[in-house]
Image (cartoon, rainbow, N blue to C red; front, side, top):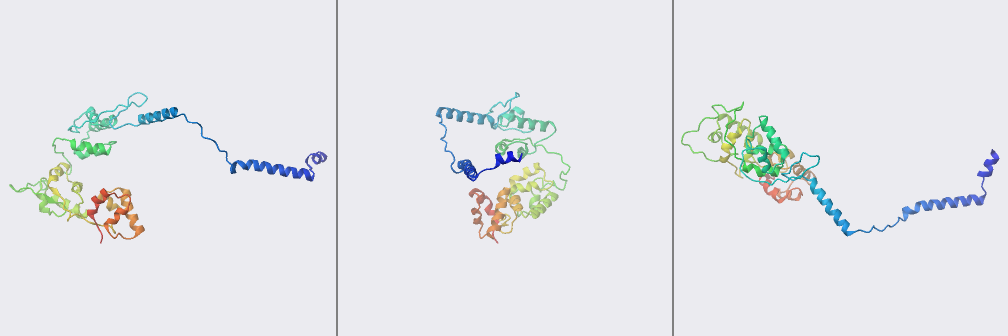
Length: 306
């Protein structure tokens, strides 16, 4: 056995050198593609075929999108049925599913509304359109001005007391009030506002640090939407009485709550302040990429630098 091993695995000096050279060459050939990658010419392109493929891809992509007003068929594939959007006055508590679809809503959204109403749900104001599950914001904004609802007073557990609905003095003309400076007596002169509601509005205004917009008044506890709709024409804001937020002290939460800006914008304002130090001017906000000229024009009247 030892002789066999010696005959087959014992090499002379020249044989060992040859083996070493052979292994070196093998290693070089293995490594060569990493240093000298093959250059392949791009395959020839048939322009007619390429054009056909691109056109087909666009058609497939369009068919996968469900535009506003489209609905699904009952068969196994999506059936693209485009419904033309119509604009007409409507009562959201009475119109049919077909009418909702005529207004441009998808069939699925229209069915959701009908199911909601069939279970006792009711739209109490035009703004409730925004609460419809699945509706797009642009569709809601388009439909709200078209809403015409019957005036019906809803019975609530927290309905105003006789004191709240006290009648204003006969012959007294209702005048518009500034929501940030109006006194309790001025609030009581508005239709449907009594002592209790007037006090609640003032307390809510004090807690919130003032009203940035008229719409904030409707958030007062116990203020029915029907009453808010009645007093809305008499509510005003004066730029001189608007609550001001110190740009170097305000929190991201207050920016979102008071100025109705997006979460990303509010955080960007705070991050910029931390990274660059206190704001020297309200105009410094324009240095933040997320704040457009339109947004700056809307929020700048509510900001100051102390």
